[in-house]
Figure 1 (tube, one colour):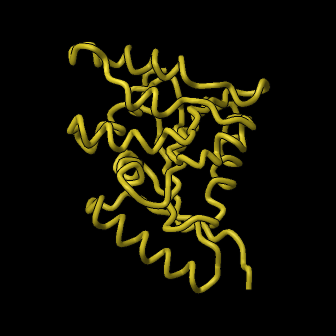
Figure 2: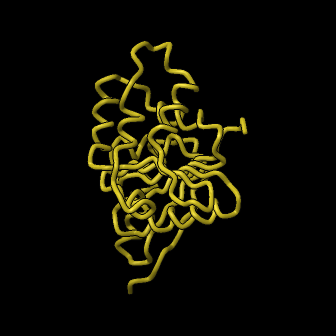
Amino acid sequence: MTATPKIIMLGKAKGGSGSTTIGTALAVQMAKLGRKVAVVDLDDKAKATWALLQSRTPGFYNWFGVVPDEPEQFTPDWVRSRFQFFTLRARPDCELWVLPGNPMTGAAESVAQRMRWADTRLRDMLRMLTCYDYVIVDGPDYGDLARFGILAADLVLAVSTLRSIDQDSVEILAELLNAVRPDNPPVWLVPNRNDG
C-alpha cells in the first residue's frame, strides 16, 4: 500500500463522553473487515491503550517527541520504522496496531513547543504511515495534542452524550474546530447515550 491513510480524530470537549470506547470499537471492527488500522493514543490517561492492550507502555512520546540527530534524517522511512518499533499488535486475528499512550504522552507537547515544530508535524508524520488504511487518533480533551490531532484529521468524530451539559460541550468543540481548522474538515456528531 502506498496511499495516505485516512486519519480519524475522536473529538471531545470533556471526558466521559464514551469517545474512547466508540473509537476502539470502530478500530476493531475495521480491522476485522480486513483493513490495516493503527490507533494512536494521544491521551496521557491512555484509555485507548488500556482498552486494547490492558497495559500502559511507552509509545507516542518516544515516537513523536524524539528527534533524529540530523534534520535530514527525518524521512518517511525514519518515521515509519520508529512507528513500527513502538507499536504493539492489539489482536492476533486482525491487523490492529496501537501506538500506546502513557503518563509521558503529555510531555510531547513541551517538546514540540521547545523545538518550535510546526503545528502540522503530527499530520505530516501520520500521513507517512502508508502501510495503514486508517489511523484512529484518540486525543485528550484539550491542549496542543488535541489541536495537533484536529489538524491531522480527515474526519472528526465528535462524541457526546445526550445530556444538556454535554450539548454545551459540543458547542465548545465546534468553536475549537473552527479556530483550529477554518477549512472545516468533515465532522460527524456521534450521540453516545442518554443518561437522562
